[in-house]
Length: 400
Image (cartoon, rainbow, N blue to C red; front, side, top):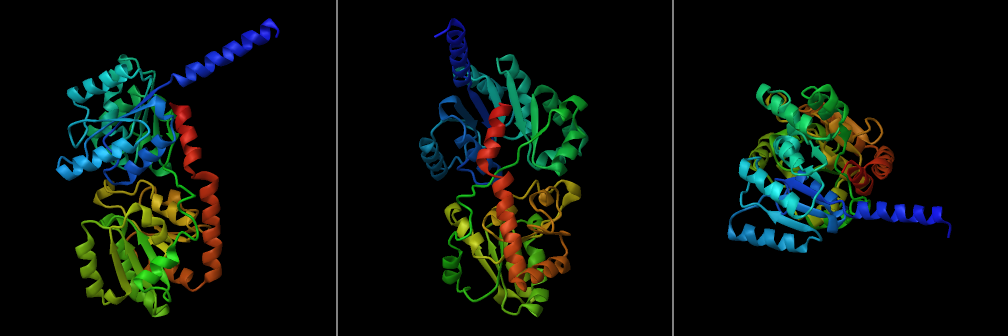
């Protein structure tokens, strides 16, 4: 072999060795078994990174015996190392910062991914001094709220200055967060939304069995999968049901999920006179969620913004999971929810809090099987084109 070829091969091996030695520390308050969308996002991304080059520093879920046992069992199943802080809420205190710095040095990490930019990204400066050469801070929905308040806005600006990249979910969150950053930090922002496992969420995911079990096999089903809180708009759907039933008398609203708003929603269904057409499943295991999406003919969650913009939908991954399952979607206009819908192609966006608009779009879909099929197919295509986990994980690898 020529000397030049040998030298080139050696350089290639060195580059591969250098890449293999690159190690990442994830610092997060949001990690399973604590439930939630951010937790699922981080875990799915972590599973797609090299487990030998990854360490997770996370809070403890619960201090109860049950919580400790569940956390220990979860951590033992992971292919990467998980280090738990003793607190149930990880904050950038001096003690936590020292621990993060210690883990960075102990494991030879050269990059850091803050699972939620605010407030953990405030540790960026200390970790940079300790040897981190890449700092990535991911934003979700709450940072858009931070950007509106003077004190937290200044903290967000500090995070932007001390990190290499702040990621955002969609245009709504980008525009609001960018306004709080320096022009230089805003220019470094990169979109990194959560993804969808298209192999888990797909048409034929078991919806027929769920419908049969719930006694809904012969009824048109509007399904809403989400935590039961006022922002999500399950109350708007209940208020829309009289209008829907006027045109589709056997329709049923299937509300999947648990949460603090359930009692009020059940009361509203009774007061509205539609209790017999609203079915609550309560919380269901994650493994059964694809089948519950599939139990619907239409997915609807007309979310709305509350508390002067502080309580807002960051993106709405449920719309994309529904699209992957082949359902047309009806979304609210809160925050970044419209970013998860191709309006007029995969579904429609309506004014959050408007039962009339929600009823009109839901009824149109229930009465038109061809339209449902066309929108469902387009939604599935869109997820495969843009929202697959493997595509988004590659982007994260490049950022780190």
